[in-house]
Length: 305
Image 1 (cartoon, one colour):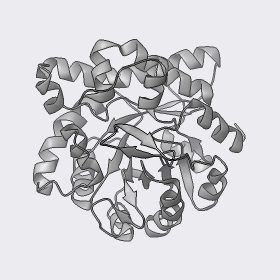
Image 2 (tube, rainbow, N blue to C red):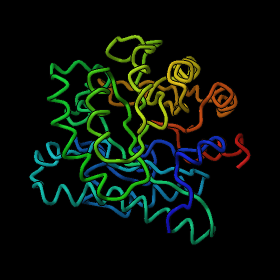
Image 3 (tube, helix red, strand yellow):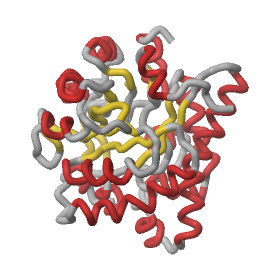
C-alpha cells in the first residue's frame, strides 16, 4: 500500500526525513563494494542486502528511501556482461526493493507514510573514476540527454513516488536531466554536488539553482554529497533563488582518499544542523556518504519524529 499523500504534498506540511548513505550501510552488513558497479552489483548478486539496508533506514525513522540506482546504468552493466533486458530488470528491481522495505515497515507500523525516490546518478558515476566530482565530461547537453533518457524511462515505469536527480556536478547535466525527466510526469528533486559556493564544475550556485526555478515538475532543489558546512551555505540560497522547498543531504564531513582507498578526517555531521536547515527552507533533509542509520535516528529526534 502506498502513502496516501504525494511526497510533494507532504513537503507543504513540514520537513520530511530522507535516509542516509546506502553504501556505508551495505558495507556495515558485510557487503564488498570494491568493483566499479559499486552497490548496483548487489541488485543482481544480493538483492536481499539492499532491501535490508533500506529497512535499517526506515526503522531509524527515514520517510523517503532513495533507491540503489545511482550507479546502475545500461553502459555500466554491459561492461559486466549484463545485457539490456536484464539491465532493465535490475533497474526496476532497485525501485521494487525499496518498495518491499517500505511495505515491511508499514506492516510493523500501520498507517506510516513512506515514499520511494528512484536515484538517477550523474554520467560520471557510470565512469567510476570520480568524474561526478568534476563534471565537464566533454559531452553536449543533447548527448547527456541521450545517455539519461533510457534509464529514466525504465525507472519511471517502475512506479517510484519521485526521481532523485542527485550528485549533479554541473549545469549542462542538470539541464539534460530536467529536459528528460519533464517528459515522464513524475516529481523530481535536483541536488548538486558542490564545493564552497560553486558546483563541482565551478559554476556559481545561484546560476545552478536558477536553472530549476521555472520547472513545474521540480518539487525541491538543493545539494547532496558535500561537506556539511557547504550544505549550510547552500540551503538559504536555493530557497531564495527558486522559491521552492530545499533538499539537503550532505556527507559525514570525512574525506575520501582515492589513493589510499579509505576515509580520512573526522565527521562534522551534526544532527542539530537540521534546525538551521529547516529554518532556511529545507523540507527534504537527510544524509549521504558515511551517514548511517544511527545519525538518521538522531535527525528524526531533532524533527520530533
